[in-house]
Length: 304
Image (tube, rainbow, N blue to C red):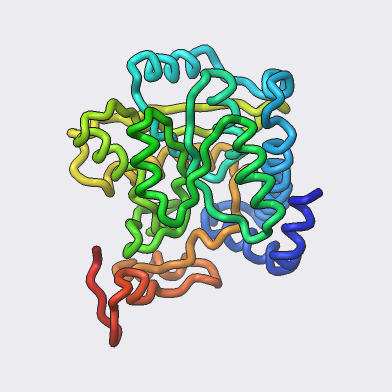
């Protein structure tokens, strides 16, 4: 109920429907209109369920065991990293019951974790989700503003890091443009940056994609390793692109479980093709100079 009230207060119904359907059409231009509307409607339902499930399961092992499923293969993969004293950098998209990912990992595999989270505007919801629930589950909350120092500290202390990849991080704040459903979108470079930092400081670490989606009424955990070692990637962009490609493959399987209520295609980079520019939804606009550099003036910028 809290989530429904928060949604109604912050996003008028008509605006929310317009935004969600525009995003679904952008990602899936091949979908007929009736499927676009169905996916959009179920996506909004999924958002509410994600938060309710997280609050309902947190700290109650019996509920977690009953309503979630994690395969022996995934458990074996996670425990193999733990046995080698490796920190895990978990990278999740806003898919399925993303909040449940940390709940399952800490409960099933006894992983000590810190989750990077944004401060929720609603103070009651922020206290419920970012403090009470995560503290009950044994999670350390690192708020995204000024997160670098605390995240590095957590790595040194042996904690696994959970982070959401599909957010509009400005280039000046450590973002990078990568392809998502055929369009360039900004994402955080933090998974790659943390991986490189850990390696440079002799901290054993593994970067994994993780997601929890609903299959046959149960929250089912998925986990995938990247295809290369850190040394085999040419740059951070290649690492983030692979993580986004994996995310996209899961979203294509479960489009109704993705958070389409977000301006994911908001920023248009300078070097898009005319064909790509036409595909961006109604709310998109060219990334302004300050998106690249806070010191930008008179329409110029330097990319960091």
